[in-house]
Image (cartoon, rainbow, N blue to C red):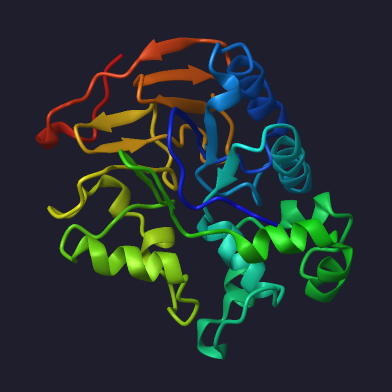
Length: 262
């Protein structure tokens, strides 16, 4: 399975899905009406699974979309990482203890249910997972790169060189106990390091509306708990939503980066 890691051209980046297939389907229906849809990349910012009503259906939806719209890719969220590691789809050291962490803290019950498995039955879930789902979870990149944008689930460390962080993300260092670029709750609200020339696009934490500064965009407006799903159109700096509304993004100043204006 080929999940593209380097892209160019217009992009539609969709916030955390968490099994809410109907919402993401409504967004894609709107994207299909765009005059440049065929050449526009669709990037899922991670967290298709857990919490919501149909995690299996969310992966099915993305795989089907990849067949009909090859310019579709995704980055791994912490939920995909936890699931893949818990099921042994990627090799992680014992000290990371992803299996227990996923079962206890990630809302994984919804994922077991969507595959028709008893909650906590890791072996049963592994056997129930279609091969295409196994490959998807195992091969998800930790970042997707664009000449103007950098897509990563949680964000970048403002106090570490971008080149170093980019190399770790490209390599997917599974020996890390809790990769901050996928798991940190604070990085989404941090500006990129000074040597990063791209605008950084992330999800991971729920925000009331899409947030934007001159160097940062946050697109998760549901957190898997309901509400309206958002998709940011780049470079147009517009938002379309699962409720059919569309607005232009206006960047706030850096010192007001937790606020957002239509």
